[in-house]
Image (tube, rainbow, N blue to C red; front, side):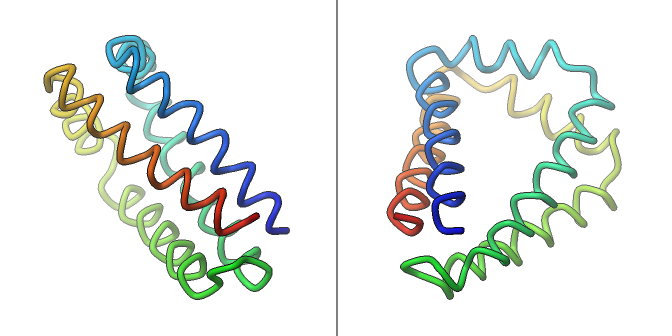
Length: 122
């Protein structure tokens, strides 16, 4: 199961690389998505990742951290669900209006997270 955590890290890392080297392309992907689609993708993605992390945690190098991340991700799914599509869209629009440098720095944080997931699942 730890292989799934590592593969998740690889996918996040590849998406983060696009965001680092072509931040406006990544922003364009989000801008092109309908707000209702972004909302459901955000909730479902976090619910799946959170469940995956909780389930895979015992077989990882850092089980407590992965388990905690899983719980935190599940809480984020519920929080976004409660937040609703309009508030999530306002938050996403705020982030999309940031400079390319800030967007790239955000994706650099995602890349660091991806590297950790690869390490934890390896």
